[in-house]
Image (cartoon, one colour):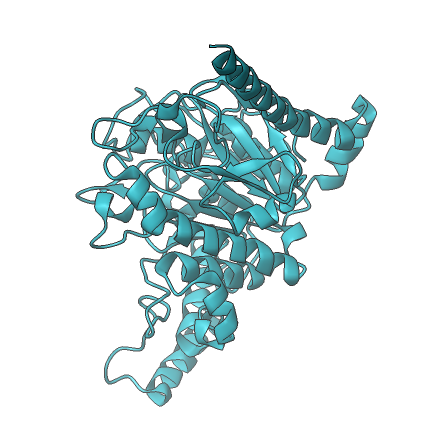
Length: 460
């Protein structure tokens, strides 16, 4: 009995050491960079608007916090699951053992462990994470993109704000849209009340396909380059003879036409999609998978001047749970077999590649999903939906790396400190891109709409 008590005391001591070590990382990291109020203001001013672009990696189905950014190695067995933890590059920060490559890049990453939506349904919790607005009602599965849940996505608002003429649209979504089984499209992915003209450009594609090209941008059968050039010349002549002033709608149409033509004739915009131009070693670094090559394509698109690239996790045919992170069954098998290895390789490659190219400081990379997973394994050896608390991670673009924000309880079931809401996460994106909290866009009737009602998280 005495031996058992001694063993338990040692276990609690080790647990407390890890707990306080991890907490110390978060608080020391923040105080080291923040210090006094004036130092925080100076740091915020320095990082404001540092990002030129944002890449959002969206893991549809929800990533389990327990096996990723918030493992509980000394918590109850049901919470900690089947996998252990490994040390990361950040002293005191432990991550799930299935993230060995990501662990080498945590000095670039701010981990937020206390994201809360309070919503346990894919489409309605996802609506919050995309728009910063709670769905009405909460926890409504298969919610459709219609009133009253027609707030614009963060990407649509950025597209509305960035009106400068570019070869590509300011916001692009790849390689598919977010939808439940049966292609029931989630709300919050488009322009909503600010209008469909601000919808991100959706490209349904597989960048890992050897024949991949810009979807829908091939010349029609029988149309050769000479005939196409003649038609462009005729169009140019018609435009030159126009005498009346252009309306806003006509100007937008002309800009979209120029973008489409650039994609058709192989200009700079089309070259951004030419993954074959990448060295084989770079493509291998990301992984020859739909997700890995989508992450690589995202890097090429921000290099081409795209402001927002939203990368949704691709479906994986023949896998449990449709290959998504919605692991109600075979949770551990799915994580170890394909989900975590594909994520770990693609995410770490993106961070490393951006850093190697000197682009990470100006590119914000967001690692998110619609919610987390339950603190208990269910009877089907899976984890279920959990919006009460989950983890996300931000890197680059003015974010302080090597930082942990927020603490959860011993089961990673509820927040203990520093709750973060979706509107706070989006406010931080806007801050990094150089938009103040009082910035507005206008809906289709001309009414002003604040881009965010959240607060900037203290990781910048």
